Length: 121
Image (cartoon, rainbow, N blue to C red; front, side):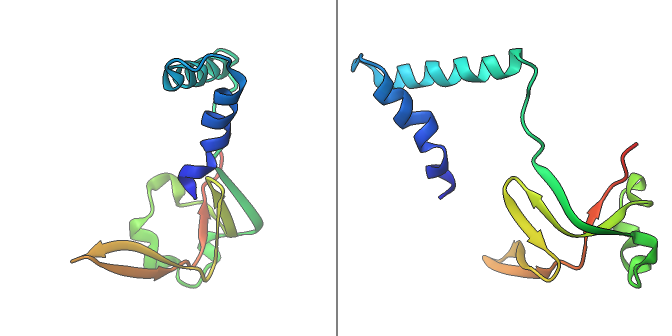
């Protein structure tokens, strides 16, 4: 599904909007490059891929804070914990089971305990 998500705006629309049928992939590539250059020149950039939701709790107030303190980066020590987070369109919630690592072609699963949000400087 990820690959097909970009199929319509990148391939179908430019392919149907051009009258030339000679080297259609080159035409599509040029249009995509021009739209990307226009985005850069407008200084709009990419949208933020991370959005935090729900209430926040300070990490120091969590009962298991000392257990994972050693793996946090230094700038996350005063961070907050939220109930869910959306990263690049996928929402992750507390209690969700994820395959986070593969060992000998077998997945290793983990449960999300909290979503850590760094404090803005």
